[in-house]
Length: 388
Ligand SMILES: NC(=O)c1ccc[n+]([C@@H]2O[C@H](COP(=O)([O-])OP(=O)(O)OC[C@H]3O[C@@H](n4cnc5c(N)ncnc54)[C@H](O)[C@@H]3O)[C@@H](O)[C@H]2O)c1
Ligand SMILES: [Zn+2]
Ligand SMILES: [Zn+2]
Image 1: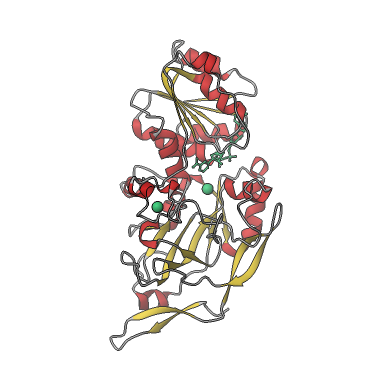
Image 2: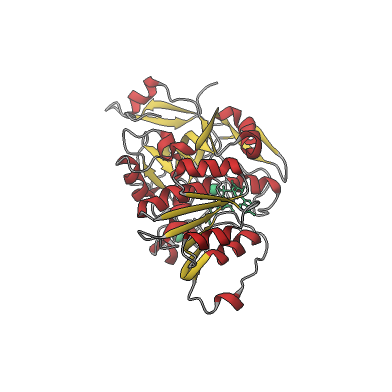
């Protein structure tokens, strides 16, 4: 197949740019309505605003939210939308107003884009952006499980991958690491010596184990119905695991904390039962940090909680902690690669969805999709020195 974007000399000084071949197509994973997805041939993305960049996707992954979309739980996603909001890639084209990035830059794409100038962006609450950003990839605009993607507000939505780091080391910073860190651990105000109870040991709950450990809690307790996931939680650093299908989680946490309860409970499932369990686990003065995406109302037992001085937080990830998390990875203090359980080529995305969607059987946590390599010749022409 001919490349969609080809390197061409653009001036007498020998500078090489990628130029999109007109009328070119690419492959992408497309949503066609509830239960329907396919690996389709679609038009290449093009620059639509001067703040856009076009990125060649080198490495991508699938999120539980993509499965929610496929179940029809997110009606805002229109049939024909390319899915995906987590990826690392190489810039092949920039709009005239992009000033922080250049063609050839190796970048992490945040699942949250940010206009940079609305009231919420000014507070680093990018998830709530009212200027056209927020969670739009694979939701309101085409996403990242494709050969190429258009990234709006590129200056605010991309992060240079530090040289020496692999795609897989940084890939999960697009979404689940900042989600568990910001919405779980930071909203929960985890402090040294705390007992932190994490309900749900999916990728988000496990990432909460990893990022809670940064604050040296005394105990991390992980609660799930799946013994396989609980075993993973132990590998990731949980001190105590509880299968709440067999054991009374509240009783166990009270025993561990001399009858007080957990300082922080992180809800990382998204169903009423687990929210209500998390509310029972916290001590007086404790915090319940809800991370789960809920589709149904949950009961808030104010008749028990009103007297307990508790704090309950909710949130959509902002990804404002990506620079901090990148530093932790660079410094060898955080290694998210342990979340990657399966690897596929990008054009095997259909099989990758099957494996990810059947996690109970396949034990998948995160699947990694590798795009085609930029040729060594092209890399040297455009000055790409990092691994792609
Ligand atoms: N707030 C945000 O910005 C944000 C961002 C990304 C994901 N999320 C949400 O975080 C949640 C977790 O994501 P994930 O990808 O880890 O999901 P997941 O489905 O892979 O994992 C959920 C885990 O919960 C366990 N579970 C199910 N029912 C349970 C019960 N009754 N008691 C105990 N455990 C139970 C499952 O066994 C599984 O291990 C989801 O709701 C997801 O939509 C929120
Ligand atoms: Zn996601
Ligand atoms: Zn904004």
